[in-house]
Length: 280
Length: 328
Image 1 (tube, rainbow over the protein chains, first blue to last red):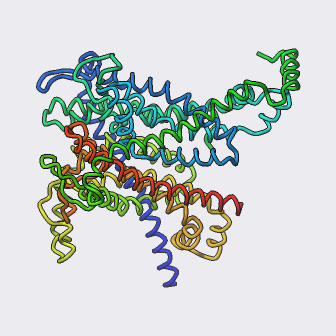
Image 2: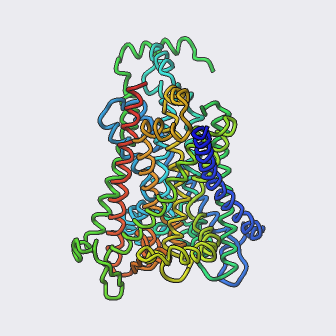
């Protein structure tokens, strides 16, 4: 009886510990989001979207930073998506049991988790140094490089889920391989691939480290991609570290905007995936 | 639009004429291969640019760079010891806190929680991973650091700080900003990554093994220690290394709260710096060539460390996949 009680107690203990760990993790999710809401909503105002970043002590908004972030994210997506999808296609359709495929897969996984600041250094040395100045192009390229491995990975995973019978049926009708891939495999995997792109966009929209040495920042509105361009993450970084209360409030507002956008993208991608029946 | 029969016939006839599939196939194959090779080129380019950028500093300081604790932009005497030390110590703290918690979370999701809760819980943990590091940074600076300064650090100083020997880790005034806070933020950030991998790995344990153990009267703790962990050992280590790779390279969250001091303190309550924080803070301000090159050399060291950790993680997870495939 004694043994039974002690075993039951130790079972309760492990359940309690594991429950505590889960509560600890969720506590921080709620804590971070809660702080963000409290501080960010207070700083939200229509001028955020109509005025540019102010000098300390005067009113202003984040219009130039929002524009810069959107512009660089769009360019990065336009560059990163086709690159990632085609490379992922190679891995899923052409590289079964091939040495090259294995190497690319391995390198892609390394790039997937490589520190993003290193990507910033890389783009700095291949674009910023030869051009002689920081630019929005360099920022967009850095973001695209961070995006590519994510898309390669999801594209390969999604294409591998397409049943081989579909490819065989198309091949039996005499379709050439490229046509099978484009019109049959892509078509049945398109939702999954789109989910991957959405998640990749979510991933880069909060990236700060690679933009520090590439797009830098700009106090003013600029739509010239050859010049440094303001962007939300770097503005948040500089304003939050500053001693000025109104800059810190703008940083909170920017942080709220970014997090809201990322959560919407993430939850949207998930809903989209489950709606199209991809999730297990 | 349904395919017209004559179109299919034409395609078939074309296929018969050119069994290889025609030029379209070669072009498409080449195109996809080009972009796959581009992925390799990116990694190659990263390595090449880091090496060439770091060369002036490495030529100047030699291998002494790694063990030199000085960092003086005025006299141009640079050493990597303080940032390397800070990177390793913050990651160590992150792992000490993050691994047990992630283990608990994964255990709860796979073994204990009711089925309807599995999906929402998993999603919430994954959302924790989706929050960008700059958000953790600003939160750490304004919320966590004051909290740690006010409550955690005085308690640590009053308890562990009094123990001879161990006390040196908790010496000095409670600043809030420092190595401990940075490590704690990293722990929260790597938690979802490690938990997600552990959950996936635990799921690979065949239910029959667990059911047999339960049938023999084992309690959950014994199932975990004697059945799940031995079966999933390699994958768990892989997941931990993946989290470690993240922690080592994490930049923004750490930069906000570590204090950016190139002095090595034994106390984890004092400010320090990490490789990525030094890069984020100083790179655009590095005016002299040697200063910039020293920073790139730091980046190169970080890349080498994370590369080794990530490659090890990847190889372990691959081994698990092959193992699971063989037994299934």
